[in-house]
Structures are given as structure tokens and as C-alpha cells.
Image (cartoon, rainbow, N blue to C red):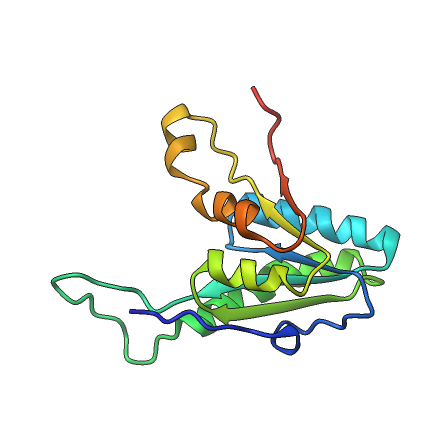
Length: 160
């Protein structure tokens, strides 16, 4: 079972003297669009953007799932962040963007990050099916109700 960690401002790379925007990134299209939006906004107000992705070791119940001995969920998460952040950073060279892959459940990592941020930005996942809306978005819901900073849920698609 994965253990969630408590992180301070230094683990998030936060300078308290600079306006900081935390963006939750999980590789989904909506999280990439949320990051792109946040970086675009940061270009106008000199904010520091921190793209945060959480990782954990997979949990299994019953039969163990074999993983290659050299597999690392942390390294996979870092690679995913780098692939997402690099092209956005290239389009906004004047914006300071940091990518952080931190161990823990996303909802806990993002709520902890909110204690050191001026704003938290999340994607909406773009699901419009009524059943899916009831099941998905639990991280967004948790963060919006527990964060210490304001939370903006970036809508990728207009409400229908």
C-alpha cells in the first residue's frame, strides 16, 4: 500500500515571494489543456507555474501483477511530465515552469501543494455522460473541497 507524504514548499520548488500556480497533470487531454491555460495566464502576470503529477506503486488484491524488475512508476511519471511540459514551455519561453513528480495519491499531493500556492488549476476530464460524471472527477471534487488555495477547474468542453 502506498504511503502519502507531506511535502513542504521546498519539495514543490515554491518561492513564497512569487505568485505560484499549481497545475495537476495526469496525462489526460484535459490536464494538458489546463496546464496550457495556466501557463498562458502566467505569461500575463509573471506567475511561476508548477506542473504536479502524483505517482504510487500499483496496489493489487489477490493475485500479484508482475511488473518488470526495472520498472519505476516515478520514472514513468517524470517522462510523462517532461513530454507534456517541454512543448508548452517552448511556446512560452518567458514563463517559469517547473515539473514535479511526487509520490502519493493525487488528491493528497494536490491538497498539500495548495498550502503553498496562490491558485490550483485542474482539468475537468471532459466527461459529459451523466453516469460518468457521478463516478469520475473524484480528485477534482476532493481538491476543490479541501484545498487551502482557490481552485479553478478548467473546462475543456462547454457545458451541454
